[in-house]
Image (tube, rainbow, N blue to C red):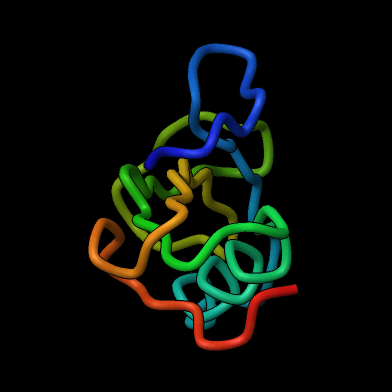
Length: 86
């Protein structure tokens, strides 16, 4: 079951990533795990886009990104499984 993450525009959680260039995807995954809901057993990053410092979408990796994450109450639904619930 999809968990309502109380997002402004839907049931997903929108996170902003700021890290070193070359480490953006790993940091996005770490943030998605850190911000998970207590009952979440899996999640899917439904959108990942590189941005510049001002939040504008760009093609190349800059170290900044926006991600949208859906969290689920079962391990079957999400692409990334969470072994240890909070």
